[in-house]
Image 1 (cartoon, rainbow, N blue to C red):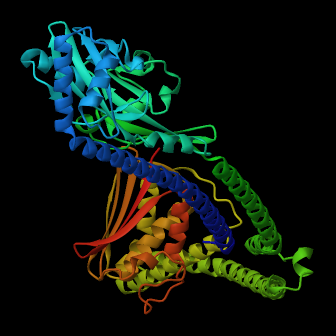
Image 2: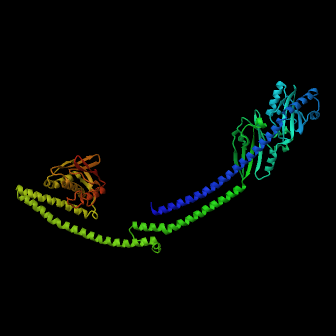
Image 3: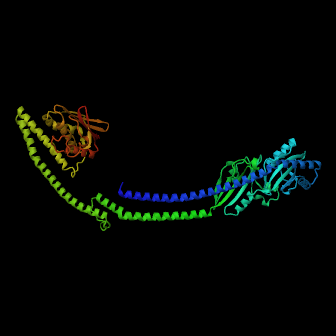
Length: 602
């Protein structure tokens, strides 16, 4: 990775780290205030649960001690009414007070018809109330209908009208009428209501709901609901009713049914509904459960959160602005200069940027050192170019000087061979011809090497079959002198597109290497075949495996240093193959080094 990229990466990581830290702080603060709300609600639930339990248990304990007394009082009242059904209720109430030592107890008398409706009572606010919706009352009235016994309720009930605990007794008076007595301890009040009323004036409004049910529906009311209620029937008509089988969205009922806290935010308040007991209280208090609603005012938290959000956004803005200027500073003072230096080095130019040369920093020193080195290197390059050109001119002149005497030697060799028919002379002439051909091949290689980069060798349609035959014939004398024989398998009339001189260089160098490195008295096999659109040229020679195939086509590389040569042949072949997209490969198989070249045919 580039150094500039590393610097940018460090900046990005730093930004992400700081943003992550600020986000973590913000989320932690938000979660903490949510936990504070949950803790507050839980504390309120525990407070009211304790208060309600304490109040109910206290009432039940006090009434439990007097259950026998209540039974006797009810029995006495029953006798009075059995003697005279028209006896005024207030008179009966007074007679009962006179007959028993009540010690702070009050008695309320109710006459109930067969439809469970109160039609006469000493407590007018209960007049007309139908007890069929009160499971406990209906249960005992049905039992006394069957057996005529007197029944005392198992628990004290909270009268939502006057906020007093009452214990009720029931009996059948005659076939059309029931008698109910309500016993009130003047020292017992349901003080949970007073606590709620006090809390309702605080910033966090608190409401308590009593939930009950009959066979058809749930119904509930707020604990402080009865202040403006005229009587109990009015109260029943006004309470919220939810059919049992319905899918209700009512949060009070859902909190009971799901036994969990329901919470949502509305404007600047979090409204929480939570069941207090999470168990059926029917046999203890006459209701299913109590649901506490707490309207938690989170104005201060929202304001604090908004302040924190503003600080968070401001911090991010300042951070990003700061990092942006840091980025610009690093870019102008460091990365841009590095880019300029890098581009000039890549393009092999002097670094002449004034912003770099005028600054007295490390990059300026590097640039000056580079410029000094660049000037020195260019001078060396110019000297080397001149030397190379002189070397090329020398080689070209040498090649040119060789051409004429080489031609004369070849002509005189032919004349000698024609004039003198002796076998001994013929052997010497063959040696001379072989040497001449080898020298000619080297001459042609040198001529191509010094000219291919400035002379255009244009491709034409050529017969590779005929050219291959000609080059094999050219090398036949050389191979014979070296005790090697060329075996050729050449398909006729195969044409390809290539420059003829370059094709000859490719063929000659492979045959020349075969003669040079192959074992004596072993054939050199050359195959030329065509399949579909591919032309395959193979050179096979028996010899030692090539030790380093990867370097074989490098310039000036020789597999065997004892075999002297120019070291240009196979590198020249590689250049020609790359020019014409000729694929090639080298491998060793069955004791032979095999060179394969694949051409595209016409």
